[in-house]
Length: 121
Ligand SMILES: [Zn+2]
Image (tube, rainbow, N blue to C red; front, top):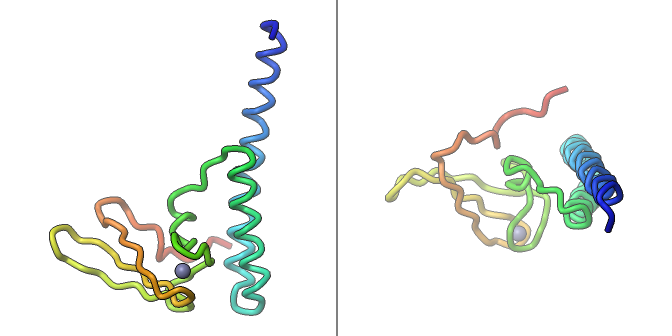
């Protein structure tokens, strides 16, 4: 590929990825807002966000990734369809139990946990 075409191609890909990241954030926000009334719609939004992430190789930020069960890919929210426990063995960590599949996810607490923050309006 000639240089200018390659540059254009890379710039396009970067732009697509940026748009993909914005869509992913929006979809998670919508999923959180709709979850109480329309859990199936919320799940659909999150599935869509994951597909966009894969299609454009846009990484889903860690604070959003925590809201997807690692095992069954359900959209999970603490106090709704997942249980959060703090454990102190070895190093402090959270154990999330997904109430859809019953499996656990272990989250180290060394990083700031944005999981409990309320969605911004
Ligand atoms: Zn699960």
